Image (cartoon, rainbow, N blue to C red; front, side, top):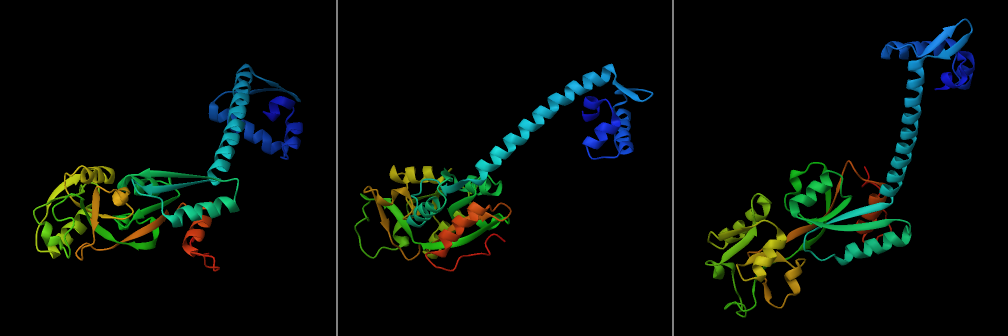
Amino acid sequence: MEAAKCLNFTEAANNLKLSQPALSKQIASLEAEINVQLFLRMKKRVFLSEPGKVFLKGLKTISKDYEKLITDVNIANENATKTLTIGYLEDRSISPRCSEAISTLTEKYPDISVRVEQYKLRELLHKLEEKQVDICFTLEFDIDKYPNIAHKVMEKTKNYLAIPSNHPKADKQTLRLSDFTDETYITLSPDVSNDVVARLTESCSEAGFSPNLKFAPSLRTLALWVEAGLGISALDKGCFLYNNPRIKFLSLPEIHTMNSLIAWNKDHLTDLSAAFLNIVLSNGSSNEITTIKN
């Protein structure tokens, strides 16, 4: 383009801070590559050939498109670095620790934006793996199946047996899981999570029986089925049903606690994500975590 503008290889080479032979060699290589003579060389003068004029017109269009593309990429990059996308497990209440960390982060960086999105269990981990979510809050189910996902335990979460409040045994004292051997137990489908199914069957096995299982396609559906009286299930207090007066949460020794996690992709940790993790995991400590980003 510079050579076509100047129609003088020496002048064009000077403008490009190249030697004249180097520029001539590049143009000759280009002509050989596309098998078209772009310049007509007559003694000490240079002219654009007809194909050269067409090529120049196309290059100008490509150049404008490229400049626009670079601008769009820079805008996208700027927006991406200023947006923190937090993934949350479906139908769960935002924990105070998470909401407090978001408030602290937005006070410290007022120009950023924070998005909180809810997903099904497997979808949430997939979004994190595919770098479509920056940080996620989830339960420990299936997390070890994703080697690129790092995590820290937020807290141990107590599990309960969730039954309808009008259940005949709802008001009885000193209940055990074995008191519910004939019930239908609603759990996630193995296609969604083998861990959830395994934990429930393990608890029932400890109580001396094999449960009659009914599989739900998602945690949302599982909770709705329990609310509808279609069965009972093991749920923690983070579930939206916890404060539902129609559901009673029974504390039974065979229903074990589990870990609530914060997780991130080890290959996709931005400065903003690291700042958020430091706020969440420091838990008010003055010792800032500096190794997370590694």
